[in-house]
Image (cartoon, rainbow, N blue to C red):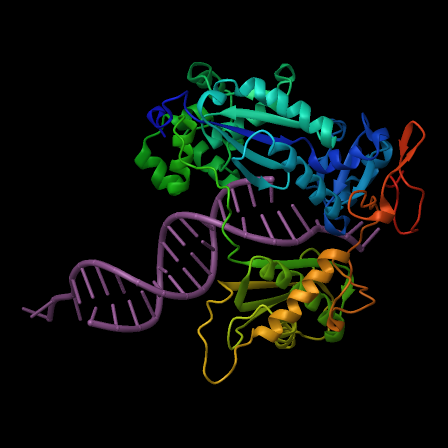
Length: 451
DNA sequence: TCTGGGGTCCTAGGACCC
DNA sequence: TCTGGGGTCCTAGGACCC
């Protein structure tokens, strides 16, 4: 991109807005007594640490660590523990994006807690001031603190955002727009802090004596292309200040939709396994229909524990006669696959499904000899189910195959309320003090477990 | 006892064809 | 004796992201 395309002002700029410790901040937004205390959020099944407050980071609790290995440390320091509450985080994320839309229409929602914003023309010139404004507004309106990185490319904006978080005097906004200071800053950034450079590439680059972002920008293009593929070359150009990765405002439909989860307790029989497999299919098929697609291929997989005992894992691939988006059809196929790979005398810990060969609905080549697996009648039925569940909650209508007991459901011992998406779990305002609603349901904690 | 889940893109190599 | 060359499609695996 060159300035000639924007004759009325400076080059376009990107701002990356990233929520600080997002899941922890969501919990804090409804339980202010958690401010200033160490807080962590656990992955599904309360397995690993996936979010930490700054106080928890300071205690040395590592990201991604298995919770059971940190339990003692958490207990000693009275760390507040939460199970992942995705309905809450998803809704808070939507609110943050809504606020961002007040600042620019050019937004790429990159993940649940990050968005790229695009600015051109004269507004780009005062983007640092605007960044401070964005920060104030989002925090005031949603309760979520964010950091803002400003730069001429998305890769540099990612880096600027990291600096905004780590530099105390940055006050949450960091500008990597000036080419002069950039060289000095990049020579203090380790290569694996760059978006797109992971551990493998870090090791590889270290073998050639490249340790900092600045050193990487000095490497020869042909060499980079060979070592890091075209993706890496693009990234290095971006570090040099040349924008190669455009704002992606309308993400393409998914090419694969996966659902897989460890069970809350091990399962051993085929009958028990049918239920989670059916539930995974129902969930993936819902996403499939939401993007108006059909799947031409389905995989089922099944595993014992990777950590204890002899490992067994297997997968089956099944193709419907024609692509379909019908939950009952897909469940039938998944169960066929499950029967093929199931073996007795194993304790299974995880099952999953994968939908691939995804095509848009309506593109089906009609076969004269059958009416197609996803005909109008099927489609109407599925749309009705999706509508009801959209209005009254995800699990209002479900197929018998998904089971009622659902003993395999994941462990969530420290779940907070769904403050923003359930009427019966709303926070209550009590005189001049906002508190959480009294315990209405024994299975849910108001503010997580106290250890 | 207890170790997450869901994606994308790129490349190399094999099969097959002319 | 002498054993081409190029294209396409598919898959597995590697690397990365949050």
